Amino acid sequence: MRGSLTDDDLMGWLRETDAARLAQLWTLADETRRTHVGDDVHLRGLIEVSNHCTRQCGYCGLRGENRGLTRYRMSADEVLEAARQAYACGYGTVVMQAGEDPALTGAWVADVVMRIKRETGLAVTLSLGERDRDDLRAWREAGADRYLLRFETSDRKLFQFIHPGRRGQPSDRLALLREIQGLGYETGSGIMMGVPGQTYASVLEDLRVFRDYDFDMIGIGPFIPHPDTPLGGREVPRAAADEQVPNSELMVYKAMALTRLLCPDVNMPSTSALATINRRDGREQGLQRGANVVMPNLTPVPYRRLYAIYPDKACINESATTCHGCLNRRLLNIGRRPGRGPGGRHVRGVERGVRRPVATVRGA
Image (cartoon, rainbow, N blue to C red; front, side, top):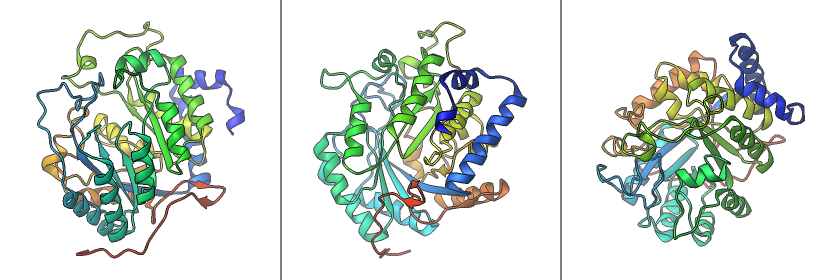
């Protein structure tokens, strides 16, 4: 399947607007998903640990210069309680996500990871931004199974525009992702769709990166403008009218479906951003166009409202129990079922690299 899609094919699909033709793409992506990863939808409990961030990314509401945002940082005990909720709901994974917060030290994160593994046996995914190799190694040794770091766009000039460097040096996320893979993590990455200045040619290159880097998880979501960011303003640079990629639901689905065809056994989430721009059934449509993962939010509700990467996020007021029940009903309505276990990527039928100690959950 990877070899059967040429660059011309991919570009044609990225620009396709005919509903009947696109219906064929959705069917092929869904059949490929079913053949390679099955009907299970893996539920990863999301814990948004901190909204502090030292970076100045042009699109993100957590950017350090956003003075209008109330900041928070969860305690280790609060993170552990959220992990216990994940276990009680039957999820196989928790995802610790945060801005680039230096107060989340290597030692602190390692300790929390070890406690989660010891108490619940859940797989632990980290999404803590661009961190030093020593921290990444320590967290892997502490038991972390996966690391997520989206490269956002393969267009270097555009990336540097939306992601100013740190410590006076430009970022190279693709190089860092290679290091993360080398440390033995299951590695996830992805892109935003429709960033001002993003062209169809750059999205085509993004798809090539997905194919060539052999990521274990790939997330694709729409660019949602945040009013308190440079890219949230009305006057932002854009590509030529016929080259600017729209930040539309349809564009996200096309990229997801093509990614499933290029990377048949990858884990792919139907993102919260999709559910935000289409609250009725965006998440379900993503699951019918190649996705097989959903990340229900376990962040305590008072904090959840403050993790404002983009505005008006879906499900910010739902308890973990309410969200769990809703998701199960939604999955059953489209003929899918919640997955069991850690839900690692299966390569040739073998689940890759997730360690499962015996669970000794307290209070569950």
